[in-house]
Amino acid sequence: MNIPLVAEIVGLEKIINTDPVAITFFIGYMAMFASAVFFLVERSTVDGKWKLSLLVSALITGIAAIHYYYMRDFYLQTGQSPTAFRYVDWTLTVPLMCVEFYLLTKPFGAKGGTLFKLILASLVMLVTGYIGETSGISNNILWGIISTLGYLYIVYEVFAGDIARLTKTSDSPALGRAMFLLKIFITLGWSIYPIGYMVLPGNLLSGAFAVSSIDLFYNLADAINKIGFGLVIYYVAVSESSKTVAVATS
Image (tube, rainbow, N blue to C red):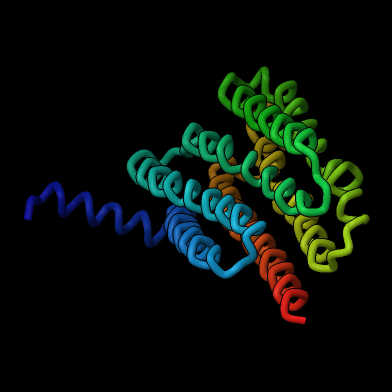
């Protein structure tokens, strides 16, 4: 075997075995790939009106798996954070997660305007976050504030806006429990993104913890949030499909 190739393989193995960030890139890739397969397979077991929801869940985890495959290689070869890859992933998957909120409440009366507002807020959050993270220390705080406002609007919609009102007026205990779990993801799981941004040099939480560990938190949060979102959607789809079958056979 070629000696430089052997040395490269040994070097990569050393990084993978000793670097927790590298390990989480592998875990994130495999976990989200497996989840995408699961949601696609289970799509055939639910009622027709929930099939699109599970398809979107599969798209979210599938897109993330592909990006994590490339982010993993980028990190192993450079040792640097794959910022551009990560924002490309978020720009595709976070709006799709907002679509999931709409699809969950659509059977109970959600309108297209709600979907538009959620997607617009997510894009504001991501685009301004990327500008702030890549345009230098002097711009971090300004763009970070704008990005956080986009995030807070999504929180508002889920807790007190259209999504919250439709959840309260629905007659679905499964939807109520699902929204309770999704509120936890939004407030605790998604909060890692603005917090990670604010620890960058020159920002509000600069020095709170090592910037080099941000990818570790991002990777774990991504896997938990995206797979968790999909599992909550799956729970509602199965519960509501069972209810439809029970009514049809009674």
